[in-house]
Amino acid sequence: MIEPISALSASLASETKKIADPSETLATMDAGAAGASFTDFVSNIGASFVDNLKAAETKSMDGMLGKASVREVVETVMTADQTLQTAMAFRDKVVSAYLDIVKMNI
Image (cartoon, rainbow, N blue to C red; front, top):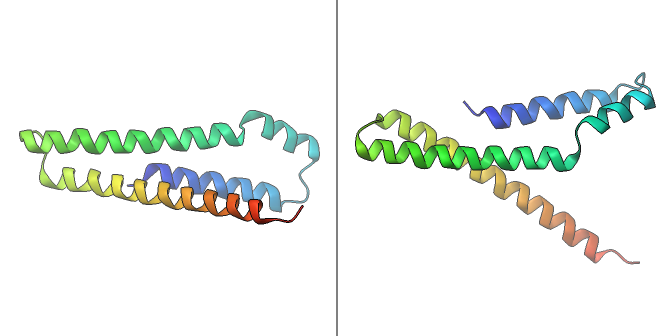
């Protein structure tokens, strides 16, 4: 149902396993890090958020025109709501981390 969040949790689980596995060498960690950066990860998540919100808008319009059932409209709107809640939680964590850094003594 929530593909982006499940993809995110799968990605985080695999990265956590990599970090927790002490047998992994530094060379393989560097090779994996070169493949995907944090910026790419965040931009992919942002793109999926936008796609979910656009899909909800489109499905809502289809529902008003009678092209989609009420169940489909509610399902996509609930997915968009969860996406928006996730984005706001992510934003809150980033702002909190920034404020913690700003408060640090130099």
